[in-house]
Length: 353
Image (cartoon, rainbow, N blue to C red; front, side, top):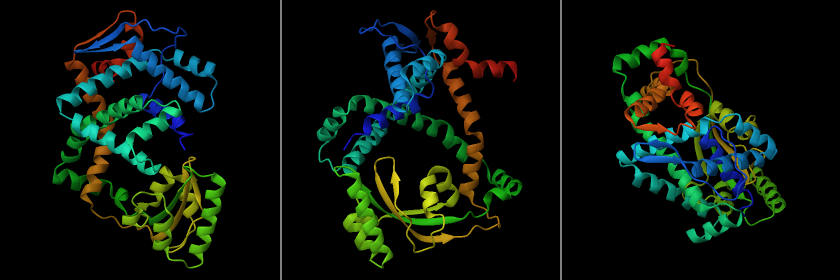
């Protein structure tokens, strides 16, 4: 059931940490020391080594040799510590903003969704299955807490301000100057019948998907088939409806789905799509809407476009301000490899580049 979970969580950890850095030690003991102090928090050597193990394991899971993975982390020795310092600043800011309860609720919801997906009745049962694959639930909880806190702080302190900042005049002027961005794209409305591999042989699930697809194409009632067979926990309420998305969004984010529905007309069914060893989706195209070259004023879309254009630069400014207002002391042994990375934006600002 959980044969792919270890790989999934390791890869998630690697994505969240962004850049690998620092050589992994071979000793079985860890000699701890403070690598950096950030206000009243610290980054320790043991914490860095733990992150490094995740990063190297992630690359090995993706097919790289451990030697190559080790070599890559050795080549980027300042980035992990710099990333961890920035993360610590965001964690501290999250506490100041009182986001802990909201973050914890979101983490619990993620575990609940996993329980539903794999039909596990208790949280202890889920954790037991995770441990069988070598995944520590406490590590996953901590990883999700950090990820969500970072996202919530940036959303509240940067994105929300950027979204509401433009005046009516700014919105109108932006629209007039960028009308081509606000034409109606081609959209598709989809529903899904999902068959999970969990607890079943993959061959039997593939056979069942073919059988159900034949029934649907033969005129069987969609809602009846999907409610009786789909493994999505919400199927009784939503009858498998995914919703309406632009075709471009599917092409960029879900290329396998996009390819499957490419030539399917409204009311038709796509060939089954396998999703990352999780299960199989049978997609129904409920509606299609052609693109239009006519521009239309959509305030939300315009605000989102302006925010998207400014988000990266403003995010860097925000992190720079957090660093400026914080007490940051880097161990002298690590300062030469960390400071140039950590304070790169500040140096660019001072130089005017």
